[in-house]
Image (cartoon, rainbow, N blue to C red; front, top):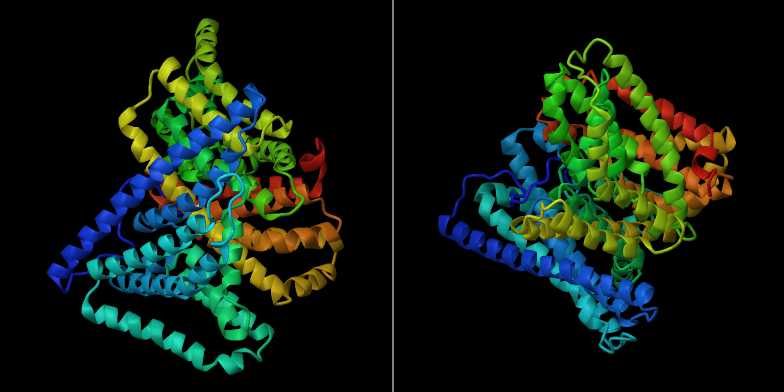
Length: 632
C-alpha cells in the first residue's frame, strides 16, 4: 500500500521495458484491462452491498429492536469475496504494500528486471496455494451456513478465484512489460532458487531454528528488498517453510488465512476506508479545517496548529495515511507558503503529524490489533489512544511554535466573533462525526463495524443535504479505491496470520517468551527493545504487517512481563509511526513529500526536530502507563 498520493489509474507492477512481441503484448493488455474492469465493478458492488446489509442490520437491531439474524452472516460471506477481489484490484493498481527503495536506487533497467523477479515470486506463491485452496474448498463444501442455508464452499471459492486472477494478472504484466532475455533470466533465478530449496529439503528438516532464519529472515528480507509485495512475501515464506521442513497439510495455511481475513471485527475496515474518502469528497474535511483556521489561523504559526488539529480530527477514519494527508494538505499548504513557510517545513510537519495520529481512533491499526490479539477490546484501545496522541501533538506544537517565531510573516488579524461562530455552525455537522464514532465504540453502544456503517450513511446525507458537495461521478472511483485498499490490507492480515501461526508452531514463540523474560531491566528493558524494534520494522514493513505478524507473539510476552496490553499497544504504534515517517527509509516521509509536492531534499534535514519531539513523547508515554490506561 503505497503512501504516495491516492491514484485511480492502473500503473504497471514493473518498470515497462521494450516489448518483444507486439501482438502478444496487445492481447495481454486487453485481457488485463478486462480483468480490471470486471473485478473493479464487482468489488464496487460488493462495497455498496456491504453498506446496505450492515445498515439494515443496525436499523433492525437499534430502531425496531428485532435483529435480522442473516445480516452478519451474509456480510461475512461477501467480505471474503471483497477481500480477494480487492487483492486483485490492488495488485493491478500497484496498491499492495511493498518496499521500493532498493528498486528505485538501482535504476530503471535493473528495477524493471527486479520487477519481473517479484512478479514471478508472486506467481510461485499463488501456484503453491492453489492445491491447498482446492483441498480446503472440498473440506468446507459440506459445511452449511446457519442462516443462509447454503454451502460454505461458495464463500471459500473466493480464495481460489482471487489467487488465480492475481497469478494471471502477474503473468500478463510480464508479457506486457518485459523482453525475452529479461524474462528468461528472471525465470532462471526464481527457478534456480526454488530447485535448490527443494533439493535441500532433507537438510532443511534437520536445521531447527536455522530453517526459521533462512525462510523468515533471509528469504523475507530478500523478497522485501527486491520489491515483492509484503503480503506475498509473508505467504511464500510461510508456505515454503511448512512444505520443506514439516509434514503438516498445507490446507492449514489456507485455513489460517481464511480465519485472519474473515474476522467479523475487520468488516469495519472497508467501511472506515469508504467513510474517510467520502468525508473528503463531501467537503467535511474542508469545513473542519476552515473552522480551525478561523479559530487560530491569525496567530503566528497558527496554520501549523490548524494542520495538527485537523490531522487529530480527521486521521484514522479512512484507514489510509495518504488519504488523511491528502484531505488536509491541499487546503492549507498554499496559504502557509504565502505566509512564508518553507516547503520542507510543511512536508516535515505533515509527515510527523501523521505519525502522531496513528493511535487516534478509529485507527485501522487499533482495529487490527484488537482483531489479532485475543482478549484485547477495541473499545479499550480507542480509549487508550487519545492521550498518547495528545502528548505527541503537544510536542509537535512546541516545535512548530519554536520554528515559526521568525518564519511566519503573514499572520492575519483575528476574525470577528460573528465569522468564527458562522464557521463553527457550518462545521458542527461534520465535527460531530469523529466524536460520535469514538464515543459510540468506547461506551459500548455499538461495534466499530456498526458505527462505521452509520458514519457512511450520515456522511452521504451531509454531502447531499447539508454541504451540497456530493459528486456522483466520483462515487464509483471512491468505491474502487475502497476495494483496492481493503484488499491490500486483508491480504496482509491473512498471510501474516498464517506466518504468525507457523512461527508459533515452530516453537519460536516459546523461545521468544523465554528470551524476553531474561532481558536486562525487566519490563523497562522489554519496552526499550520494543521501541527500537518497531521503529526499524515500521520503516521496512510499513508498520501494519509488523503488528499483525508480531502482535500475537509479543502481546502475551508483554502481559507476562507485567506491561498492560493497551499501554504496550500505544508504545508499539507510536514507535511504528516514527519508523514509518522518518527518513531515509520511512516510506511515509516520501509519501508526505509527494502529497505536498515538495522535493524530499528540502525536508530531509528540517524534519529531525519534529522526529526528536515524537521520540520524546514516545518515551513519556512509555514511562507513564497512566496516559494509556488511566481512563480504562
